[in-house]
Image 1: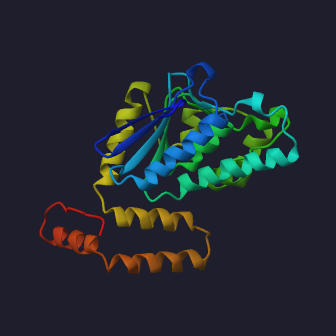
Image 2 (image 1 turned 60 degrees about the vertical axis):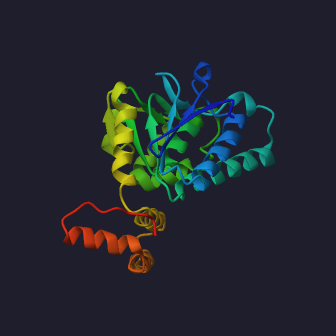
Length: 257
């Protein structure tokens, strides 16, 4: 079905592998187009409960964009390219099903931006992160200036983006870019273990949590938005099941209703 992606679906977990190891899984137009299709599949396929995005091989998650496609673009084409990528990454960020990045090597430029568009990131011990676009005379275009600033604060993001400095997995963990760091052979099993925990929860509650977090703005509006979504939970069968199971000291069986 795809020329640049590999996909598997096991026990509700959809694993998407960027499969251009000879190009360090760099993002080109075909990869972006196919990611659009695969993200639509996550949205529409009820058998998919959560997803993992990773890279083929043991060197790279996604080592940036395919720079050969940049050479002949003018300013209008560059802006259109950025908006196209931003729309895709926004769809990932706002998906009601959890999508996590399993970063197994270089996550640079667009690769770092894609990882940050996932709901959270786990990394292998050999992972490297960075926004080195400034070395090409350009800036991050797929949301990197915005998401990195939200993740690690303005000063740190400014330094990393202006210097183009690459950081290792331990620094990414310290800064809050990565949630966990594992040895390479543990990365995908741990990703699936985390997702199995999440997909056992109420899918309606998961959806509302993602929605509220994406509406975080550090003002009273964020609290009001949370209160509204909290109230909506009380009209669901999942809430009744969760509360009843707690009182009966048994595991809940959520049905997303």
